[in-house]
Image (tube, rainbow, N blue to C red):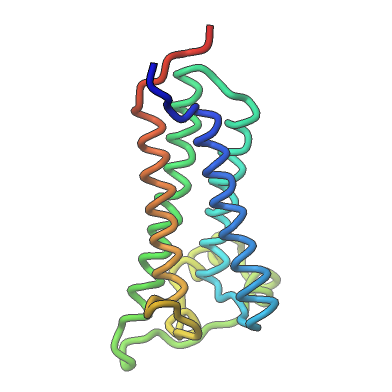
Amino acid sequence: MPHTLSPRLVFVALVLLAVISMLFARVYLQAYVGLEACPLCMSQRVFVVLWGVIALVAAVHNPQTVGRRVYAVLCGAAAWAGAAVAARHVWLQHLPADLVPACGPSLDYMLENLPFQDTLSIVLAGDGNCAEIDWTFLGFSIPEQTLAVFCVALLVSLWQAVRDYPDRT
């Protein structure tokens, strides 16, 4: 019988990808390099944590086929939503300077003074702060790298959702 990756191992890999992504963002980029996360970066982090938590619950639960597929679709949905936010961020970074939206108020200010729905709408739209490119690796900005990570998580989740794996007996 050929060796295949167990569903639990795939979910653990998704958890590790989320943990590594968050450690890179918080420890390296924010604490070591000194970059502050813009509102769109914070939104992307929420989706990384969301797919990571779903994958962790799936790895601990270790469900049979239907449950595995449900967890995989939920992980994929979180990764897809994060990819959409990251794509918006990349788009903002590639706008001509005269089309970049004005910088808005801080997230703390918006949370304290605006209704949550308005704050969420403003945050997901991004502003001029989100268009700045402060750091690159191999020529790719942080949102471009994050978009790639979301795409990997989405593809792994989709594969996990559709692949056949014999159930435990």
